[in-house]
Image (tube, rainbow, N blue to C red):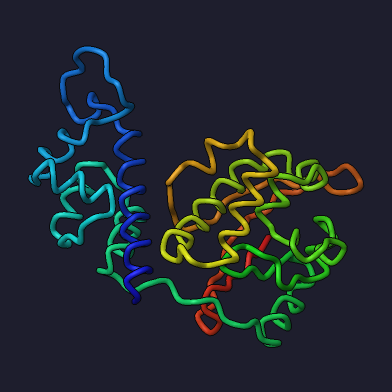
Length: 258
């Protein structure tokens, strides 16, 4: 890892910790709430004291100026009430866990797999949620990705910015939030990835009203969820949406609708 990449990861780690500190109120940790606070959430000195580290060291950690031990990160994670996904993300950014694999090319075997599900919509996504392949059932349920220009062929972008997708999936927000948390997990681990940078720029430009989403540092592995889709004939179908990871093509995943 180059010094530039290491510095970028330290800054991502610091920003991630700061965002979670600002989301956590003192009362949630049993601390007295006295007076008016100039900043949201916990103070740095409160996190430092509860984690057993010095204030200066914790400040430098949030500023991305220092490397630190796994034990310190785990202590800070407990103080900030990080869930399992967030703790794993912190360790990965600090270099204490295996990094996310780099995206690889999509092979014909995966596109053939999609075609083997004639009744279940399925779409192949890369690490930035760009749509790289889909089956006929998918383009029968949702707008055909083949009709979109390549830069807009992104599932998350379509969910948040395309009215046609939102008419078919009226409750699109929970699905989009889960997908964004998933992509943020990859984005922090690969701060120099041009595809992820392009996606975050497009999202901020097309939906500035969702700035609270784009500024959120929440991460998480996508888990199966139930969605309702409105068909062209006016009927409603219920689908279980599951993400299938593909170890043979690092960074790719299949989103399957059953």
